[in-house]
Length: 328
Ligand SMILES: [Mn+2]
Image (cartoon, rainbow, N blue to C red; front, side, top):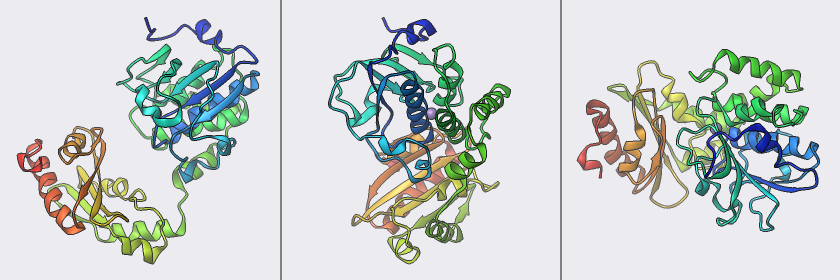
């Protein structure tokens, strides 16, 4: 039987010096995935284990300042003594980082939806980030928080809380920030690098999207084109954070961004919602997926045609709080 909250002694017994360990996290990694991977990785290395870190997808640019990030591999083929999953709600979200039939010895997470797929599980849904779960347990697990570990753990906490401004941030969270700073984390650098810094191209690309924002009935939307990327030099067919920036509008409940991709007639759509709304439902109606607050889909058609289908459905959803039949 898997445990739901493994006793610290059981976890501590896993890390015998000399053992080989693979730590893996989820596809499309975010700051909490990378921060958990590096934070635990640095501590286990300091404890005398041979550590390999695995992520199926590349580390986003805003997290490349973290020490040790260059050693992360896309796939592990040699089976270790221990396999640990961090910040991953289920086994499948590890993607191709490790073979699907390797059992997970320890699953550390904070997602409410976690499936307890580890032999030992440390899943705390109230925790603001998986890095917070790791930082809170480090001492009980017999681990020492080194300065590079502290920096990685703080970064995951900052990104999952959007810079310490989500409702999940409690007095204890700020005490944890203080403790990580005492262990050598640099708050100002982590905050700037992970959350604030942008390239010049990104600022201009984002600006084009912001300038053409439109709003109707508390739904705000905009689009970004291939041409926008050509003129600004922004290299990736994504929204560069535009959808989050649009949802900052006081007057809006929902935000949508349409991105013309580099594939012919494929449009990427990103939805964001303030609390109480569920754009995941809307995204699923268009063959995509996601959560209540953030969701996405890829839809075939020209930018114009896709907007003409998806925008009325989004406005209708907002008006009736139901996904209209026509969206299916
Ligand atoms: Mn997380």
